[in-house]
Image (cartoon, rainbow, N blue to C red; front, side):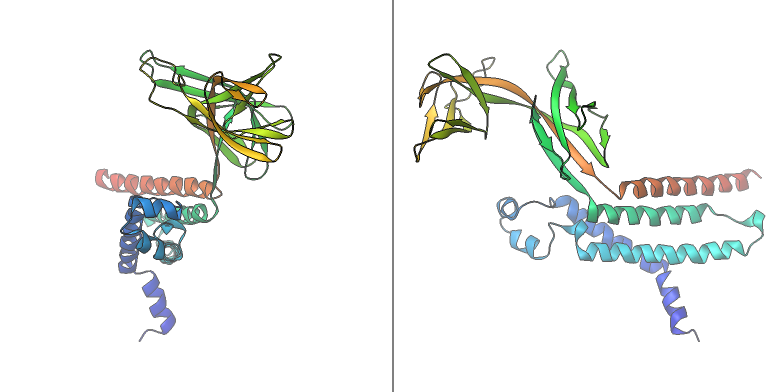
Length: 321
């Protein structure tokens, strides 16, 4: 009769246990693919009005970082580890020419891959910066980057072809970030994620001096400030016309302790200034990602492929021997 440790050992390396865990992980993965992950509570209440309470109660909004998924993944890793150990020690008892280590590499690769995936789920950090030319932004660790230039290429029919951002790093070095050509910086990988058009509000005083404000920016004036809050369009711009034609700027004017919300068009007064319209600008969207699990995922995937290669090469040799 087998002892309790032997029964536990046999249970942990069971193929049935592996199949059961794979099915559960697959189901959770499908649910996680259907339900957007990591969004705000308001998003689920709006997107899934009838199911939002259940989604939030069961933590279906954070499946891949939840305890249930991670426990199942950890148990699957233990199952693979014990199975791999049992098989590998069995192969070592055979004559060298009869050993087949392809499945061992495959199993070990899967173990490393699962470990990397779990590490990614727990430690992955992601941030998106939207910068106009000359603006400076900070990565989550405080590293400052400044967008010095940006280029956009389009096909003859107007479709985007390529985006490229020039970034000034701390110390003065210049680096390029292109689509499909990310920048590696202090453990971060910076991708050219997005590109969009924006507009700055232009103002002029009686002496002809001008200044501009980006949306969300504030300009100090005597006794207060001007805040550029938003752009209001009375009606959609005509095809081929300037997209900001007829648009108004929504401003918050603070002066001598009083606050006033203004909706102004070109030529309208704003305190001692006049609003002179909008100045178009291109904005680069840069996504910064730090993923400690990625090297393990890549290594595990490579080992699994190598194991498959060894396995099928050995079988082919047996067929043609």
